[in-house]
Length: 299
Image 1 (cartoon, rainbow, N blue to C red):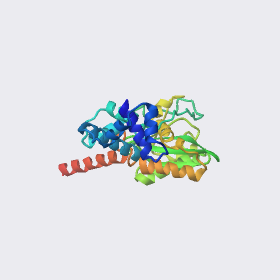
Image 2 (tube, helix red, strand yellow; image 1 turned 180 degrees about the horizontal axis):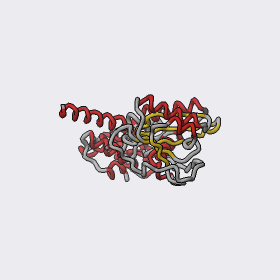
Image 3 (cartoon, one colour; image 1 turned 120 degrees about the horizontal axis):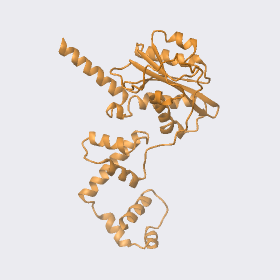
Image 4 (cartoon, helix red, strand yellow; image 1 turned 135 degrees about the horizontal axis):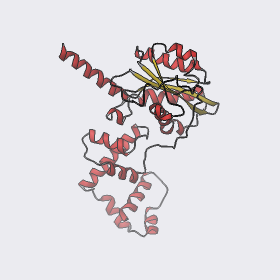
């Protein structure tokens, strides 16, 4: 308990707060001479190791934009040669007053217009295809700004969970979801075998069906968001990890924040348990590297 008091007093002093160290120590009922002896004492090997680990935890947490919690930080530490448990990392994070950024998501529903049996669920919750760009999923989510709602449409490759393309719009017109698909095809140079969506009016429209001609269109069951869980989860993720930190002013502000999260962090840096704790881009690159090595062996 006494060392904890000493630590807090030193922290306050180093931060330049206007305080009388001796006065604070006297008020708290601890020894002033003991405090200065503690300051001069070199940390033990175990204490120094703890301080080093806490510094690494702080660095990893900061580089993740304060998004990573104990599980991901533990994995990164182990990859860098540290022998440490998730429980210990969690305790250190608590002691340091840092935590993963999280806000409870709210549920947004999309109005379905076609409840017939003509729209088949081809995907059937098979969220793990065996190669990139064979199966995509897509959905629309609402982004609140001071100018009103904006609408984000994302295309996810289910193999790597990479966001292949995205479109931000001021309206829910079908042309915007088509633009997202067009961007995805242009970015990859490929058309997927299957593209999965919910039964929203945009995805059951003639214009959408015409643009995706030649791709098998898969639809969630009636009123069942779990059939499109991966893209629903991503839209929840981008909000609670990033967008809900900000008072978003307008379309331009929202666009910049979405670009920063998807293009500069989620696809390229953020580790994902589905991807063996690699980023989506790294996971995809690993697939192509392995494919290249296999082709060399066969040749």
